[in-house]
Image (cartoon, rainbow, N blue to C red; front, side):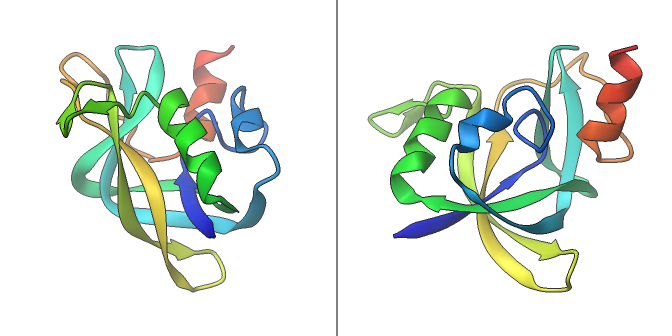
Length: 132
């Protein structure tokens, strides 16, 4: 069975970890509302619930590939106790073509203290400013 995943950071097209999607099928560009994007510890992007919006992409991939993404995104739990950096949750995203889709997404679950917020919600645009 195939699943959809919303990616917003380093797994997006032309980003360093896009290869993690393997042979996933690109569905559309999308916006996730009710979340905010942060530059976690000035090292990597992460989202938390909030009043903003996050820009990303939706892909379709085999369910088994989600477990590979879980590992890459450090979505780890032991006996239902979350010990990793993120949690995979089902969200509703609005695609560029106007559809509302359910998709999995990785939400940061650790402390975001001292992590700057990215007001635009767009990691790709923000990353251009830090890679100069």
